[in-house]
Image (tube, each protein chain N blue to C red):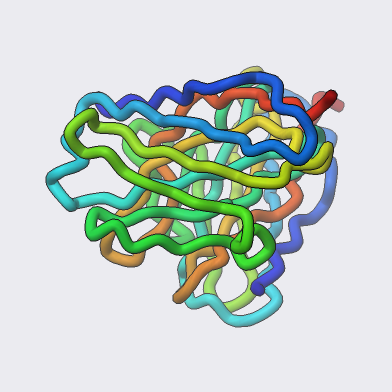
Length: 108
Length: 121
């Protein structure tokens, strides 16, 4: 099973600032990574797939990069609704497909 | 617009079987273009993939749950289901259904709103 490790656990930031969230895979997974945003009481929402392709309707302030074992999600200018939790997920080869433990972006 | 909606009991007794159904709207499951998956999220944790079912009825389960999970599909009613047997308190979670691709690009989109299932006597 591939383990996805997200860091940091919490990111303090201010509205308008940019942040970068990291996700590391326990083995190489090419670009088979997706990122999700989860607001309290809601289901996760797909932001990025293929490590860097924004899903339909996702604002351009969200961008993803990386390949192999290291991946990042960057939010260029935080909006009030962005202060929530983000998860990475791998979908390389065969299942099980696993998620990271999440990074919470909180108001500084 | 594709939408998924979970349904089922919110409370299950220990050792019993948890059964949930996901009704799909906005796309025909008969098209064969997608696969259908279940994911759960225990309180305060990241999501956990449970398994998925293809149009062919082939199923793939998380090895950690494999011996207790069964998935099925009813294309005539555009819905799919999951059963988890011998539940314990550790199975208390929000259960989500979601769509994934049939081509191997297995990200999940969209998701249902989720249903909280509590295992307690």
